[in-house]
Length: 313
Length: 164
Image (cartoon, rainbow over all chains, first blue to last red):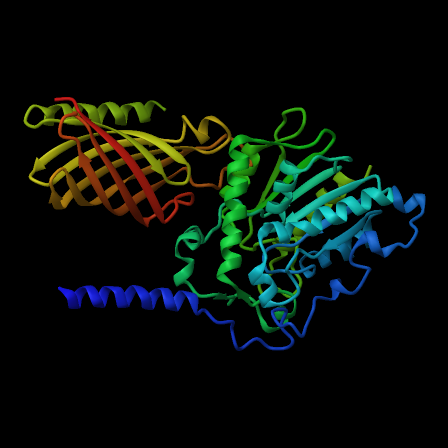
């Protein structure tokens, strides 16, 4: 009996020890975004953010619609680069590429940050643009970027309301339901190494997803689910658009339905929803992707057109 | 909704027949699944330690009534008390059933599933009060088959009032 008890105690201690001694990955290459040797270019280049791009913006620039584009979990500004190139070449809009907090830096900084840290640069850029005098600002979020924007809508007292908000494959319910277990089992889990990204992508996405970051991801999704349940109202004058890929491999498409049910404009109207016959997650970005169909390109163009139309008079 | 009512009455009907032979008990349940979903069940003891139950859980009174999904779960379960000590018992549970989702008729959402199967295994503890016609139980469930909204791990609180 004593021996059994001893084995049980030893097993528990071993499991706890395994959980506590989780080491940083050792195979991080200097060219990867996870490496502390390589920083995302948006951290040093002022051209990524509209607020730092123009030193003294003219009235014409201040009245040009600005779309703050927010990338998703583990990604970087690259996710919206294609949209920026298209939109600024084909329409009278500016695109501000925000890098989420703790993203584009290093594995260690990502591991230590909370989802509130991730979200902070969104409102920092928004408030800077308002202070500078920009009059028409929109917010577009891909995946977790949309989750963070929806949370900001619920929790911010807006001095100047956004003109429109766009949710692309926004995370409310994850496709992989094991994410729900992370808060309970994180001591016994190891970091996830992303298998879906190719070598070229490792400079734009974190390869490793620390358990701590996954825990934060579940926390922000849970927060939004609860907020949507009680209802989120957009500020007066803000319109909203939901885009969802029908066979999204990362976000459960039921997320779009929960956004549709939980979000209303200031008149109490439901938001516009478009779903797309696609297998891709965040089909606004097709660069560097292996299997892209003509339909995906058509869908991408349709989303771009809807976003630009909503921002331009 | 008519089908929902049909299922409830069907189970009550079947359970009433069983009631002729064995005492039936009525349970109020609180399921911590995707939402917090209240439910009702009728359970029927087969023999020592083994019981069958039929239950209905819904989000219609909580999240569904606000802005969440209207989810209905119809479940059949088998409980087996593996360990009994005084008024407390440890039991295992197997449940099967179906979940149904009521989605608003919008062409954009026609691709979404409106029902799915459920298969779950669980472990729970229950406590029967000596002087009160009341039993409390808590169950942890692992979903072997899960719908798009079901969490792999569920948690349920129950209160049983034997009415015969």
